[in-house]
Length: 107
Image (cartoon, rainbow, N blue to C red):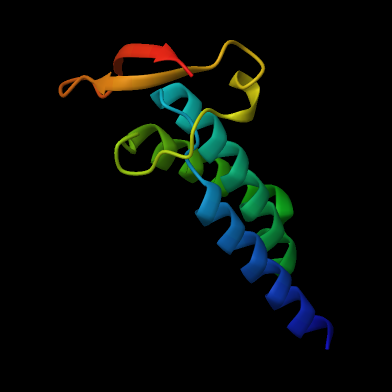
């Protein structure tokens, strides 16, 4: 019974992390959010195998790498939580070469 609950919990954490991974419009923002989600997911899965720390490190590095390498055009969930308290701006034009916002307007 406990093994079944652990598998369900790990699956739910992994699904949630994949669903909300790579928030942000800059590579740095996506790397931070991907790293945090990867570390949390890695710790949850690692705790099932007995090594939560190792799982957190592997998940954090993998999540940060994936977050930094993704394009905001592929998946954009809006600004990350640490940027939402500032003035809201919305990007209206992206650079083809850098993938960064070239022109933004107040939302």
